Length: 286
Image 1 (tube, rainbow, N blue to C red):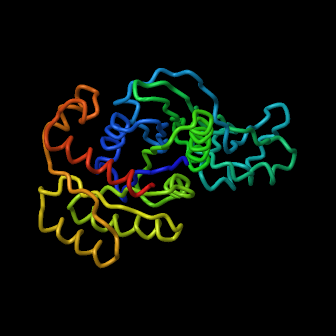
Image 2 (image 1 turned 90 degrees about the vertical axis):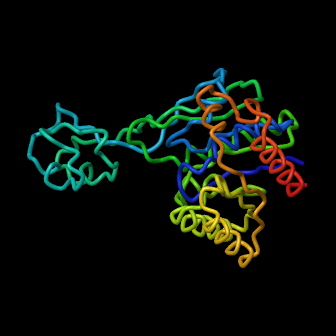
Image 3 (image 1 turned 30 degrees about the vertical axis):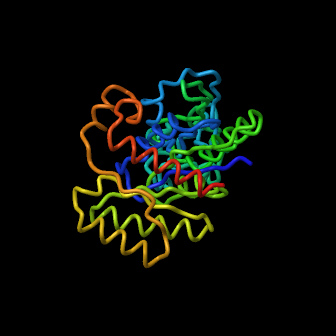
Protein backbone atom coordinates (compact mmCIF):
# COMPACT_ATOMS: atom_id res chain seq x y z
CA UNK A 1 0.00 0.00 0.00
CA UNK A 2 1.28 3.46 -0.96
CA UNK A 3 2.58 5.58 1.93
CA UNK A 4 3.26 9.31 2.05
CA UNK A 5 5.93 10.97 4.16
CA UNK A 6 6.22 14.75 4.29
CA UNK A 7 9.38 16.48 5.52
CA UNK A 8 8.59 19.65 7.48
CA UNK A 9 10.26 22.20 9.71
CA UNK A 10 8.97 25.00 11.86
CA UNK A 11 11.45 27.41 10.24
CA UNK A 12 13.35 27.66 6.99
CA UNK A 13 16.96 26.63 6.47
CA UNK A 14 17.00 23.50 8.62
CA UNK A 15 17.95 21.12 5.78
CA UNK A 16 14.62 19.69 4.61
CA UNK A 17 15.42 19.81 0.91
CA UNK A 18 18.87 18.28 1.41
CA UNK A 19 17.26 15.32 3.17
CA UNK A 20 14.50 14.91 0.60
CA UNK A 21 17.02 14.93 -2.26
CA UNK A 22 18.99 12.24 -0.45
CA UNK A 23 15.85 10.18 0.16
CA UNK A 24 15.17 10.48 -3.59
CA UNK A 25 18.52 8.84 -4.28
CA UNK A 26 18.04 6.14 -1.62
CA UNK A 27 14.39 5.17 -2.07
CA UNK A 28 12.98 2.82 -4.65
CA UNK A 29 9.47 2.94 -6.13
CA UNK A 30 8.53 6.52 -5.26
CA UNK A 31 7.28 9.82 -6.62
CA UNK A 32 8.69 13.11 -5.37
CA UNK A 33 6.76 16.28 -4.56
CA UNK A 34 7.99 19.79 -3.85
CA UNK A 35 5.22 21.31 -1.72
CA UNK A 36 7.23 24.44 -0.94
CA UNK A 37 5.65 26.20 -3.91
CA UNK A 38 6.40 29.70 -2.57
CA UNK A 39 10.15 29.06 -2.75
CA UNK A 40 10.64 25.75 -4.53
CA UNK A 41 14.25 24.56 -4.67
CA UNK A 42 14.20 20.75 -4.81
CA UNK A 43 14.63 21.00 -8.59
CA UNK A 44 18.06 22.55 -8.06
CA UNK A 45 19.38 19.20 -6.82
CA UNK A 46 17.29 16.85 -8.96
CA UNK A 47 17.69 18.56 -12.37
CA UNK A 48 14.19 17.71 -13.65
CA UNK A 49 13.25 17.49 -17.32
CA UNK A 50 9.75 18.97 -17.62
CA UNK A 51 7.22 16.69 -19.33
CA UNK A 52 4.02 18.60 -18.62
CA UNK A 53 3.42 22.26 -17.74
CA UNK A 54 -0.01 23.49 -16.67
CA UNK A 55 -1.25 26.95 -15.73
CA UNK A 56 -2.54 27.48 -12.21
CA UNK A 57 -5.45 29.91 -11.97
CA UNK A 58 -6.48 31.15 -8.55
CA UNK A 59 -7.91 34.34 -7.11
CA UNK A 60 -9.08 37.40 -8.99
CA UNK A 61 -8.11 41.01 -9.71
CA UNK A 62 -10.17 44.07 -10.54
CA UNK A 63 -10.29 45.55 -14.05
CA UNK A 64 -11.65 49.02 -14.88
CA UNK A 65 -13.34 49.35 -18.25
CA UNK A 66 -12.37 52.75 -19.66
CA UNK A 67 -15.42 52.88 -21.94
CA UNK A 68 -17.75 52.88 -18.90
CA UNK A 69 -15.65 54.63 -16.26
CA UNK A 70 -16.78 58.19 -15.41
CA UNK A 71 -13.70 58.80 -13.21
CA UNK A 72 -15.82 59.61 -10.18
CA UNK A 73 -12.96 58.54 -7.91
CA UNK A 74 -15.07 56.42 -5.57
CA UNK A 75 -13.09 53.22 -6.23
CA UNK A 76 -9.81 54.95 -5.37
CA UNK A 77 -11.28 56.28 -2.13
CA UNK A 78 -12.56 52.93 -0.84
CA UNK A 79 -9.62 50.70 -1.87
CA UNK A 80 -7.79 50.01 1.40
CA UNK A 81 -4.86 48.43 -0.43
CA UNK A 82 -3.99 51.43 -2.59
CA UNK A 83 -4.37 49.26 -5.67
CA UNK A 84 -6.13 51.88 -7.83
CA UNK A 85 -4.34 54.97 -9.07
CA UNK A 86 -5.46 57.20 -11.93
CA UNK A 87 -8.26 54.70 -12.56
CA UNK A 88 -5.82 51.88 -13.31
CA UNK A 89 -5.56 48.75 -11.13
CA UNK A 90 -2.16 47.60 -9.89
CA UNK A 91 -2.60 43.83 -10.14
CA UNK A 92 0.13 43.11 -7.59
CA UNK A 93 -1.48 45.33 -4.94
CA UNK A 94 -5.06 44.21 -5.66
CA UNK A 95 -6.33 41.67 -3.11
CA UNK A 96 -9.43 40.71 -5.09
CA UNK A 97 -11.86 41.79 -2.38
CA UNK A 98 -14.45 43.01 -4.96
CA UNK A 99 -15.42 46.12 -2.96
CA UNK A 100 -14.60 48.46 -5.84
CA UNK A 101 -16.74 46.46 -8.26
CA UNK A 102 -19.62 46.45 -5.80
CA UNK A 103 -19.67 50.21 -5.21
CA UNK A 104 -18.98 51.40 -8.77
CA UNK A 105 -22.11 53.39 -9.72
CA UNK A 106 -21.79 52.61 -13.45
CA UNK A 107 -20.61 48.96 -13.25
CA UNK A 108 -17.31 49.82 -14.90
CA UNK A 109 -15.29 47.44 -12.73
CA UNK A 110 -15.25 43.70 -13.26
CA UNK A 111 -13.30 40.92 -11.52
CA UNK A 112 -11.07 38.78 -13.69
CA UNK A 113 -9.49 35.42 -12.76
CA UNK A 114 -5.77 35.52 -12.07
CA UNK A 115 -3.13 33.25 -13.57
CA UNK A 116 -1.16 32.66 -10.38
CA UNK A 117 1.60 30.34 -11.58
CA UNK A 118 2.40 26.99 -13.16
CA UNK A 119 2.75 23.41 -11.99
CA UNK A 120 4.88 20.72 -13.59
CA UNK A 121 5.29 16.98 -13.93
CA UNK A 122 8.95 16.22 -14.59
CA UNK A 123 11.34 13.31 -14.97
CA UNK A 124 14.49 13.11 -12.86
CA UNK A 125 17.17 10.46 -12.65
CA UNK A 126 15.45 9.37 -9.43
CA UNK A 127 11.88 9.17 -10.75
CA UNK A 128 8.94 11.51 -11.28
CA UNK A 129 8.82 14.93 -9.61
CA UNK A 130 5.69 17.06 -9.27
CA UNK A 131 6.52 20.70 -8.52
CA UNK A 132 5.24 24.22 -9.08
CA UNK A 133 6.13 27.88 -9.36
CA UNK A 134 3.95 30.69 -8.06
CA UNK A 135 3.85 34.03 -9.81
CA UNK A 136 5.18 37.23 -8.25
CA UNK A 137 3.24 38.27 -5.12
CA UNK A 138 0.78 35.38 -5.43
CA UNK A 139 -0.43 33.89 -2.14
CA UNK A 140 -2.90 31.09 -2.93
CA UNK A 141 -0.26 28.45 -2.29
CA UNK A 142 -2.44 26.13 -0.20
CA UNK A 143 -4.56 25.34 -3.26
CA UNK A 144 -1.45 24.78 -5.37
CA UNK A 145 0.08 22.48 -2.75
CA UNK A 146 -3.09 20.37 -2.80
CA UNK A 147 -2.97 20.28 -6.59
CA UNK A 148 0.61 19.00 -6.80
CA UNK A 149 -0.02 16.44 -4.05
CA UNK A 150 -3.12 15.11 -5.78
CA UNK A 151 -1.25 14.71 -9.06
CA UNK A 152 1.63 12.97 -7.30
CA UNK A 153 -0.89 10.54 -5.79
CA UNK A 154 -2.32 9.84 -9.24
CA UNK A 155 1.17 9.08 -10.57
CA UNK A 156 1.90 6.81 -7.61
CA UNK A 157 -1.37 4.93 -8.03
CA UNK A 158 -0.91 4.54 -11.78
CA UNK A 159 2.65 3.28 -11.37
CA UNK A 160 1.84 1.15 -8.31
CA UNK A 161 4.60 2.98 -6.40
CA UNK A 162 5.31 2.46 -2.72
CA UNK A 163 6.10 5.98 -1.52
CA UNK A 164 5.28 9.65 -1.99
CA UNK A 165 8.11 11.78 -0.57
CA UNK A 166 7.17 15.43 -0.09
CA UNK A 167 9.44 18.38 0.59
CA UNK A 168 7.14 20.53 2.68
CA UNK A 169 7.18 24.29 3.29
CA UNK A 170 8.47 25.83 6.52
CA UNK A 171 6.26 27.29 9.24
CA UNK A 172 2.75 26.31 10.36
CA UNK A 173 0.50 28.18 7.90
CA UNK A 174 -1.88 27.19 5.13
CA UNK A 175 0.75 25.57 2.84
CA UNK A 176 1.96 23.40 5.73
CA UNK A 177 -1.58 22.26 6.53
CA UNK A 178 -2.16 21.49 2.84
CA UNK A 179 1.09 19.48 2.74
CA UNK A 180 0.41 17.57 5.94
CA UNK A 181 -3.26 16.62 5.91
CA UNK A 182 -3.76 13.00 4.93
CA UNK A 183 -0.06 12.06 5.07
CA UNK A 184 1.04 8.87 6.80
CA UNK A 185 4.09 10.31 8.55
CA UNK A 186 5.81 13.64 9.14
CA UNK A 187 9.56 13.98 9.53
CA UNK A 188 10.25 17.20 11.41
CA UNK A 189 13.71 18.62 10.82
CA UNK A 190 15.06 21.00 13.42
CA UNK A 191 18.36 22.54 14.43
CA UNK A 192 19.77 23.23 17.91
CA UNK A 193 19.04 26.95 18.02
CA UNK A 194 16.53 28.80 20.17
CA UNK A 195 14.37 29.66 17.17
CA UNK A 196 14.62 26.06 15.96
CA UNK A 197 13.38 24.72 19.30
CA UNK A 198 10.51 27.22 19.46
CA UNK A 199 9.33 26.51 15.92
CA UNK A 200 9.66 22.74 16.38
CA UNK A 201 7.18 22.96 19.24
CA UNK A 202 4.72 24.79 16.97
CA UNK A 203 4.90 22.32 14.09
CA UNK A 204 4.54 19.39 16.51
CA UNK A 205 1.29 21.03 17.61
CA UNK A 206 0.08 21.15 13.99
CA UNK A 207 0.89 17.44 13.50
CA UNK A 208 -1.01 16.53 16.65
CA UNK A 209 -3.99 18.62 15.63
CA UNK A 210 -4.30 16.65 12.40
CA UNK A 211 -3.42 13.30 13.97
CA UNK A 212 -0.26 12.77 11.89
CA UNK A 213 2.51 10.74 13.60
CA UNK A 214 5.89 12.48 13.64
CA UNK A 215 9.56 11.65 13.97
CA UNK A 216 12.29 14.19 14.72
CA UNK A 217 15.63 14.76 13.01
CA UNK A 218 18.10 17.12 14.68
CA UNK A 219 20.31 18.48 11.91
CA UNK A 220 23.77 19.88 12.74
CA UNK A 221 23.21 18.67 16.30
CA UNK A 222 26.85 19.16 17.28
CA UNK A 223 26.93 22.93 16.73
CA UNK A 224 25.18 23.28 20.11
CA UNK A 225 24.94 20.00 21.99
CA UNK A 226 23.31 21.66 24.98
CA UNK A 227 20.35 22.76 22.85
CA UNK A 228 20.28 19.34 21.19
CA UNK A 229 19.85 17.81 24.65
CA UNK A 230 17.02 20.26 25.30
CA UNK A 231 15.29 19.10 22.13
CA UNK A 232 15.76 15.44 23.05
CA UNK A 233 14.42 16.01 26.57
CA UNK A 234 11.41 17.88 25.19
CA UNK A 235 10.67 15.13 22.67
CA UNK A 236 11.03 12.44 25.34
CA UNK A 237 8.59 14.30 27.56
CA UNK A 238 6.14 14.63 24.66
CA UNK A 239 6.50 10.98 23.65
CA UNK A 240 8.04 11.75 20.23
CA UNK A 241 11.04 9.81 18.93
CA UNK A 242 14.23 11.53 17.85
CA UNK A 243 14.99 9.30 14.88
CA UNK A 244 18.28 10.86 13.85
CA UNK A 245 21.00 13.28 14.92
CA UNK A 246 23.00 14.46 11.93
CA UNK A 247 26.36 16.17 12.56
CA UNK A 248 27.55 19.32 10.84
CA UNK A 249 29.83 18.65 7.88
CA UNK A 250 31.09 20.95 5.12
CA UNK A 251 30.62 18.08 2.66
CA UNK A 252 26.92 19.02 2.55
CA UNK A 253 27.78 22.47 1.20
CA UNK A 254 30.16 20.93 -1.33
CA UNK A 255 27.40 18.61 -2.56
CA UNK A 256 24.97 21.53 -2.92
CA UNK A 257 27.51 23.51 -4.94
CA UNK A 258 27.79 20.57 -7.32
CA UNK A 259 24.03 20.15 -7.49
CA UNK A 260 24.07 16.63 -6.03
CA UNK A 261 22.33 14.85 -3.15
CA UNK A 262 24.90 14.48 -0.40
CA UNK A 263 24.45 10.67 -0.27
CA UNK A 264 25.75 10.48 -3.86
CA UNK A 265 28.56 12.96 -3.32
CA UNK A 266 30.03 11.47 -0.16
CA UNK A 267 30.14 8.03 1.47
CA UNK A 268 31.06 9.34 4.90
CA UNK A 269 29.24 9.62 8.21
CA UNK A 270 26.58 12.00 6.86
CA UNK A 271 25.54 9.51 4.19
CA UNK A 272 25.45 6.67 6.72
CA UNK A 273 23.27 8.70 9.08
CA UNK A 274 20.83 9.74 6.33
CA UNK A 275 20.66 6.14 5.10
CA UNK A 276 19.82 4.95 8.62
CA UNK A 277 17.18 7.66 8.90
CA UNK A 278 15.50 6.53 5.67
CA UNK A 279 15.48 2.93 6.92
CA UNK A 280 13.88 4.15 10.14
CA UNK A 281 11.18 5.96 8.16
CA UNK A 282 10.39 2.91 6.04
CA UNK A 283 10.02 0.72 9.14
CA UNK A 284 7.61 3.23 10.65
CA UNK A 285 5.57 3.41 7.44
CA UNK A 286 5.05 -0.37 7.25
